[in-house]
Length: 238
Ligand code: 6PG
Image 1 (cartoon, rainbow, N blue to C red):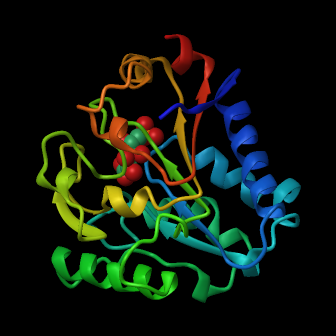
Image 2: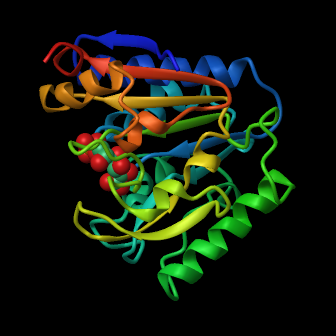
């Protein structure tokens, strides 16, 4: 699947381009807008920008529903928590209704947390099975790991082949190892997937993605809608 490329000067410009792109998609939509957030360090600037004076008042927060593509299995106030990162950079600073923030539970066990989140997603979607013509997410943000992982879909784990479950507990390479991840079928249920990739260390994996390498997890993302790559120059050119 051919991505639509957005190549920006640096990480700040990448965050602005992604924020403007999300705003455009919001403006072009009506009704609930499900934004599936990514963890990792790259999207932090984007979240802070969406919460800044320049953007906050232009976003219809009552229509926005925030979800998470993956979570580290730690309490929500733990420094490794993806929820905490999104809360500190974005959620705590914007007038989004609490009921529109759909965090991945941090207990009582990884399997139960995954099952509970699958229920949450299905209730929001209003169906038990995915219809390719009706994407669950308006926008899914994803990162690219140095080993090619995305969300918490790490190379070689059985969750890569899951077609039925929407959410699974997994053990990943990147610390902390115990995680909860959305699976390919549900990540692909997106009107648009945007990979945010910054820094020269991403370049070798981006080259493999460019060549269509589906042996790495991020190469297997195939959204029912559009695929966008937001990169800074360092990531795009090495
Ligand atoms: C996480 C992720 C993970 C991340 C990539 C890229 O929770 O760790 O969701 O998939 O997006 O590892 O991370 P960076 O943006 O920090 O490079």
